[in-house]
Length: 204
Image (cartoon, one colour):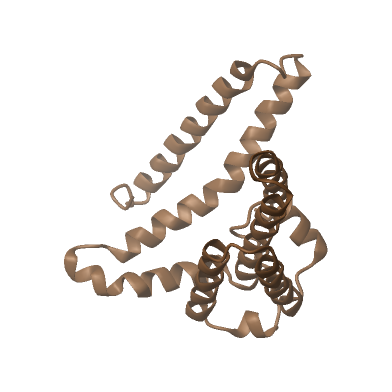
């Protein structure tokens, strides 16, 4: 699960670890909006400095940080190459720095916040909407299942890709996309059956 941003929790006692979920989520939203709205290279590096400070305060391990952000870095490189071609180097640098900033800020949140705490916060925030017929417990269960399915789905993707490469079919997308879809659907059916067996079949 540490290979995705969500679920990369790292226990600790830093200021960010002790901070309630609400302020951290609001802070991430404010930083994200600022990064998107402010279009300036200097400001981009300033926001990056803020994100790096958050990561340092949280004392996130380098291995955790690398695993959680390497996918974003790949996207950032591709996006910056396109921006360089279309708008020039300044825009490319700003795009890369902004994406890295958002990735670091997201890691700072997930690394200092247990998934259960996030789900409990969602239930609390949705509680006022209960009067409109929204079952907050079901929403939390759906989120928990989605979060739990991410690492499993990534593992299936890697396994089917490696199997296709081993058979010499790495350049044929159908060779791994078809078994990947079949395995993901089968996993979903198994999950649904397990929930139904526990009386939770109508919970999601």
